Image (tube, rainbow, N blue to C red; front, side, top):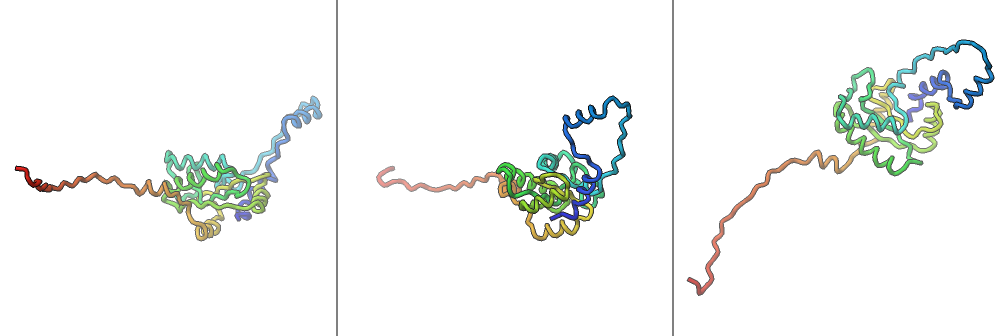
Length: 205
């Protein structure tokens, strides 16, 4: 699992991203401060680590990116691109095997297969399932309570060894009907005519 790869994201989140306390807590804090006329001081947050721009967390973000790649409305990036974009293909998508609906498990493989077909400049995206214990480790690394899926884009820093290992041990997603549709070729109808002599029946002129 990409624990060490994603750890910088969790460390940055833990040190510099303050968890939301909710509206009630914020309102109570303002009351406690009273009528102080202090100008709010906002500390500058240091930029997120480079790996953060190559990682998407959650079904919504990953699905949205796969839809863009599948539609072909944007030109996908290549392996040599140094910076990611919203159309950069995924190298690997990790998905929790437990606790997911059937719709989640059925739609994602098809979207991955279609997006991979349109991103032929890079290896096909690998779809990897992980168990609940691995999910707990991922949550701790990223710094969020629960992780249902993690997408790592092509060209992510320090991801080469992980991607090569996954590509070697995990086969690309295959969708039979998609491959049959792409291999289908138009064949013009050909009619063959044969002339046959029908013998006359006996007793007829």
